[in-house]
Structures are given as C-alpha cells and as structure tokens.
Length: 341
Ligand code: NDP
Image (tube, rainbow, N blue to C red):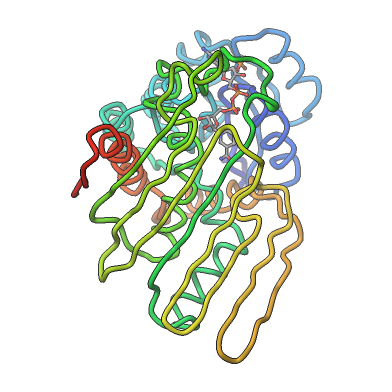
C-alpha cells in the first residue's frame, strides 16, 4: 500500500467492464487506486496509461507473468474471460498479491478449486457486486429482522439480448472453452444464485433445472440460451431462478415471506436506480436507491478488508458454492433429475 494507506491495484484484462466501469470507479476512491493495466493490446495499455493519471505501467500478459513492475501494485483485479481467470490469479498469488477475481470465479468447479488452492496464502475475494450494493444489503437486513416473517420463496430473474450487446456471434460468452458449460447460467445465473444465498444467509441443498437453446449462429454451442432452475434451501425455502441471454433486458429479485414481501427492481443490473417495495399487512412502502457506482462500493470494501487484514465474506470457499450450484444446474437439466449437495 502507499504511505497514506491506499491499496494499489493491477487491472488484468482491459475489456469493456474494466475500461468503462472499473477504471472510472477507482479514479474516484480514497482507499484504492489503479496503478497498472495489463492487456494483450498495446493500444489499450497505452490508452490506460494516458487516460488515467494513477496508472503508471501498461504490461502485456507475459510481462505481468514475468513480474515486471511487481512493486507497483498490492492487489490484482482479474477481469478476463472466465476460463482465463486461473492463470492470472496464480501469477498474482505467486507474487503475494491480494486477489479480486470477477464472477464466475472460473469456467469449471475443478479450475475454481485450483484457483482457491493457489490463493491459500493471499486474500481472495470474488467480485459479487450485489453483496456491497445498498439495495441488496437492505433486502438482507429486512429479511434478517423478520420484517416479512419467515422467508418462503425467493424469485430471481436476469435477462439481456446478447446479440444486440456484442454484435459478434463468436463472442467469448458463447464459447464454452472460454465461458464454461453454458452462456446464461454461468454468466447471469450467478446473480440470482449468489444474491439468494446472501439474502437468506444459507446455501442450497438441492437443484432441479431446465435449459433450452434455439441454436443458430448465436446459440449453437451452448445449452442454455434460456434456463430456469430451482434451488432448495434449508427449512423448505425455495429459490426460483430464470435467466436468458436472448430476451428483453430486465431483472428482478423478490422475497416472499410468511408475513410480507420485498421486491427489488431492476435488481441485478448495475448503474441503474434500484427500487425496493415492501408489502406487509400494514401496507406498501417503497424506497428508491439512486444509481450507485457498484464497482466503487465493491473496491472500497475489498481495499478496506485487505488493508485492515479483515476476513472476506465472499472468499474462495464462498465462491466455490456458486460454482458447484452452476455445475449442478447444467447436470440436473441434462439428466432431468434433482441434484443433491
Ligand atoms: P470483455 O470481452 O469486454 O473483456 C475481456 C478482456 O479479456 C478482453 O477485452 C481482453 O482484454 C481480455 N482477453 C484475454 N484473452 C481473451 C480472449 N481469448 N478472448 C477475449 N478476451 C480476452 O469481457 P468483460 O469485461 O465483459 O468480462 C470479463 C470478466 O468480467 C468475465 O469474467 C465476466 O463474467 C466479468 N464481468 C463481471 C461483471 C459484473 O457485473 N461483475 C460485468 C461484466 C463482466 P485485453 O484486450 O485487454 O487483453
């Protein structure tokens, strides 16, 4: 860290999320700053150094792996396609750096387990931005306080039209070698899965699922253009989740309890205002959360934990549960049976 206690981060992978959401968020943060940009593109590296005063070094992946500018950063943020998280996390851990790894942690349970093992001696956090989001934290708090009674059912939905977003059927999210077993559950399903776990403060015991793909140029390589799945939590609490990479862009998260209901809209998309509706026999109230910079909140939390040497809730073991659930969703959809953990 710097003398004034700021965590210095190397940003690995300068894709749209790193460039448009992470670098701007870090430019505006007191306890965390970006000092290194790692990219396969020399133009992007140069651009990052030119555009962001705190970014002093632009490295290629080989230079990063070789330890160049290793003293210029304390932590590494990995934001590459899923199946390329592991090698960069291994490099970071080898140099003793704290790791913030994007979701999903990796492309398979096996690779995610290797990632967690690599970080045995360094702090590891998975980038679940809903866990530091104010609206989602309020939902958790209301459930904890019993405001809706005992939770009975959770509904989580997230969908987007990937073809309109990326204009490229060879995009890595549709390539199993880079994304993992599918396109919707791996990329979007993680939001309802992890947010359900976070809000209920529990882990699922079993999974049933159905997936569907229309094939064609965009979805021929993935089983889940769309997916619906059900997570059985302890005490008979059920999470019903649906995701699609080829639908209207929308999301919602809802908790129904024995004595009320909470809805969070639009739920999982960052950079939009979130509205919470609380309905109980006493009536309905709503709170609007102005658009928050979720990546700012996420990095602020990460830096606070690492600098303060405090425990990290969304650590590797926490992330592995999601990876196992995602894998079980695909297995359950394929063989049509209920998968028990
Ligand atoms: P992008 O495709 O925009 O960026 C990924 C970057 O990885 C590329 O720009 C490239 O950067 C680098 N890269 C290295 N090898 C490859 C390769 N073979 N194919 C494609 N890119 C490669 O992806 P995103 O930024 O959308 O996603 C990156 C990660 O972040 C994923 O794990 C994703 O799930 C996660 N994510 C999380 C979000 C959240 O809300 N938490 C939102 C968006 C993404 P370069 O040219 O610099 O080498």
